[in-house]
Length: 102
Image 1 (cartoon, rainbow, N blue to C red):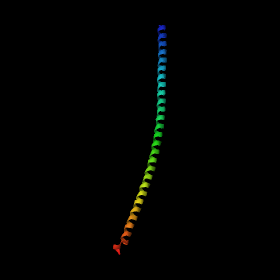
Image 2 (image 1 turned 180 degrees about the vertical axis):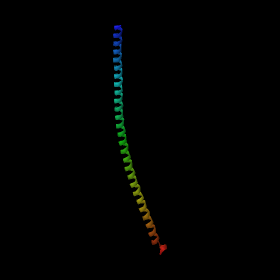
Image 3 (image 1 turned 180 degrees about the horizontal axis):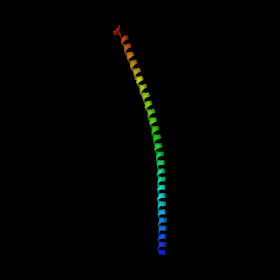
Image 4 (image 1 turned 90 degrees about the vertical axis):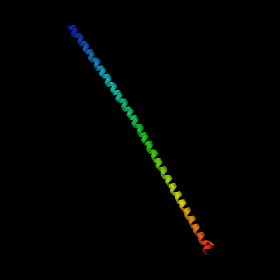
């Protein structure tokens, strides 16, 4: 009887130890997975931040380009308007200086 009890006690202790070791392995595995996930998240966030900064810079460049183009358009319109005024002025002066008007 004592041998059976001792054998079952030893079996039970081994089983408990094996269960504890298995639980420890799962815990370690879970911690490793969580650590890897955190690392991946950090890398992903850094890349997203970098992409956002690049997009912001490009947006600012586009705004500067648009502003420059608008300035050029305004200058060209003024130049055309000045030319039109000169032409109109010359046309009117030609009319007043023409022999028909005298």
